[in-house]
Image 1 (cartoon, one colour):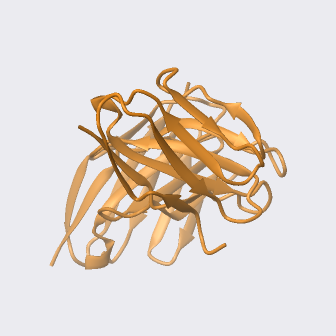
Image 2 (cartoon, rainbow over the protein chains, first blue to last red):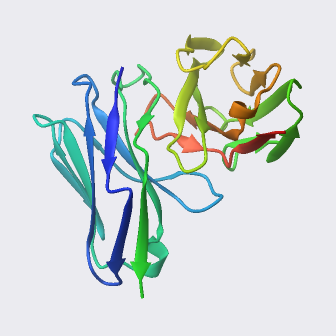
Image 3 (cartoon, one colour):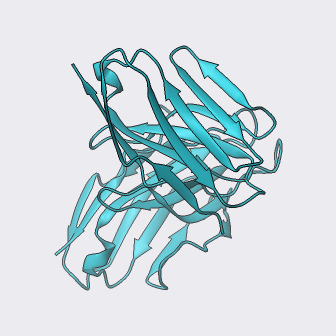
Amino acid sequence: GENVEQHPSTLSVQEGDSAVIKCTYSDSASNYFPWYKQELGKRPQLIIDIRSNVGEKKDQRIAVTLNKTAKHFSLHITETQPEDSAVYFCAASRRRGTGGGADGLTFGKGTHLIIQP
Amino acid sequence: GAGVSQSPRYKVAKRGQDVALRCDPISGHVSLFWYQQALGQGPEFLTYFQNEAQLDKSGLPSDRFFAERPEGSVSTLKIQRTQQEDSAVYLCASSSLSGTGEAFFGQGTRLTVV
C-alpha cells in the first residue's frame, strides 16, 4: 500500500518569513495530493490540492509543487501570519477519473507549524 | 446540509463496552470515508463506502470494528468490546464523485476507553 513520509515534524518561522513542508510517497499509482490544515481540536480542512497532471499550483500565499519522478511534493507558505499556526498534513490517493470515485487518503504524520511574532 | 456532522462529539466507554458512532455526510455525497486519528498522528484510513456499498474495509484494525451505510446516506461505525488502544478521534469524510472530489471532514468523535 501507499506510504507517505512528511518532514519536518515541527517548524518554527518568524512572522512574514516563508515555510516549506515536504512529503514523499511510495505508490506511483497515486495521482491526487491534498494538503490539510488542522487546528487544535478541530476538523482537518483542505487548503490546496494538486493532481499528477500538473507540477505546480498556487492560491494566494500558498503553493504546492509536485515531482512525479522523484515522488515528492511540497507545500510553500509565503508571508506567514499568526493564523497560519496549526498542524499541516499532506496526503496521497488514487482518483479514478470523473465518476470513478477514489481510494482513501494516506496521510503523513503532520507538521506542527509555529509562527513566531 | 451545512457540512459533515458526527455524533456524539465525545464518548467515554468502559473497556469491553460496545460503542456506535454516527456520521451524517453532506447531502448528495456518494463517497463516505472513516478515519482513525490517534493523538499527535495523522488520520489513518479505516473504510470507504460508495453509496451503500462498502468498497474497501482494508483499514479496519480488527473484526471488532464494523461499519455500515444501509441507505447510502448516514453511516455508523461500531466498535465491539472496546479496548484502551481504541481511544482516538474517529473522523468521517464525504465527497462527491464529480467536480473536485474534495473530501470534507466532520469534527470527529473523541472516544476514550477507560
